[in-house]
Amino acid sequence: MSRNDSICLSRDQHAELYGRGSQPRLIVDHPSNAPLFGAHAQATLVRAAELVVEAGDESAVVYAACGGHTRRIATAAVMSRKGGAIGLGDWQIEPGYECATAADRETVVHRITRAAEPSK
Image (cartoon, rainbow, N blue to C red; front, side):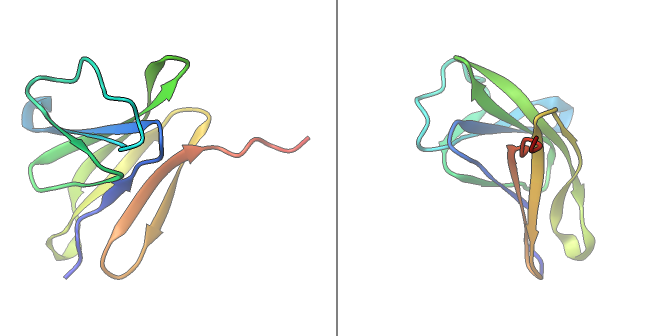
């Protein structure tokens, strides 16, 4: 049986999972980050380097610390996959970033990284 997709966070990143009605359900903040301020009161805050999507989630948003504030760098829709697993797709990646995906027979892990700068 395949497992649900996950997002592996880099230092200075946090992600939010939204459920039905676009309600924030979970905020996952990388353990190396300074504490988050102003987090949604109705969402659970967890310090971890990886988050796994679950049934009932509708979207995931990844943020990065940038010059003293946070910036949305990627958004994905949560969808059912073959075998009953929950996956991430329809990624909207902000300029300057890319989504690296590692997959095996059981799981898909997504990592949002800065895009390589073209060599001159």
